[in-house]
Length: 211
Length: 211
DNA sequence: AAAAAAATGTAGTAAACAATACAAAATAAT
DNA sequence: ATTATTTTGTATTGTTTACTACATTTTTTT
Image (cartoon, rainbow over all chains, first blue to last red):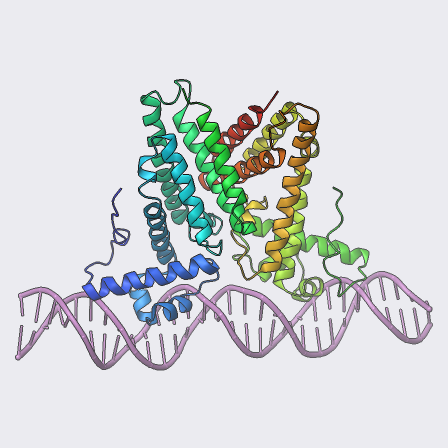
């Protein structure tokens, strides 16, 4: 997947100058940082203005309300997550690649010292039922994530690396589930054990279908 | 574990009348319902007043600020979760019991139609780093949860139902991780597949250590 | 029954907040 | 150069929010 930009979600107002694009990007970056650190609800539009060094008029020029800004942040963070997991996430078609991906994820989380809610999983809890648009966007980001895993496993299945009775799609979902649960618990406990244990169990499970 | 009450967390003001206890309980119930449905941040103290049919003075008589109310809600929801999973959670010492527990959890989640964030896992995302007290309470609730699972698996290990090279504590953490990830994704997607797939994978993993 | 304490009702305050109004400056289009 | 459009600055609005002041009623204690 290529970064299909951050703009196509706002169709009602267009024509962005170079300077405009830069400002818009600066706002998203600032908002993403703040929301990752202290949550969406606790991040005010004034906070964003301060951090991005823009006035209120600018903020509302590029995002017509907070909901829209949040959606832009979700897209931004999702892309950051996928980018950070490359090139592994795009080629999970061997046990070795799966293992390397696992190691990378754990390294990333340790590097962040669990102070982050950067990954999109931490946004799930903050999206209320009311914000249906944001929720469905999150759903499709997770679907994409799951799809990347699934693709690799299907490949292994087709190549005969996984036994024929294995269900690649199910294995992918189980792996993603373990990953998300691990991230949740590791963030809460501020230590990496749950993530490592969960991922290792899921990988072991997948390996049990090796030919 | 016995319901060791909701009161011992506030020591500075005591002596609760029967009527007082009832009012306090009504407030917690109302707050828990609202926060489960629309999140902590989006639930105002006025909302709680309306729902519990109490005045502002009553609310602040029993909880000296919102943080304290949130902590009471966390405790309340945690106990509700454990209670709902009885008698299975207390006796996870056979494959049959584990399977029954899994079925119960899925049934509960389906019954709630995924409209709920009732379970405590949904509170994790809303607890900011700033609210350290609430976070550490959540940590210990999860530890208790993990402990209940672990106890059963240790029992199976001691009885020789699980092979000696199995690590009951690790298996318990992996199972809890899968459970939490499954709840997260199921809540987001509003369907039970991720939860079922994640739990089944974890249980299969545990079964692979059967003698 | 009198005194003390707990429970509740009514009204309000001050701050934080999302969002707007409107004009000036910078940039692009003709 | 002139016009149109985009970008930015300043000030403000109206609402929501957590929380409080204080008086009154109800219940408990003695």
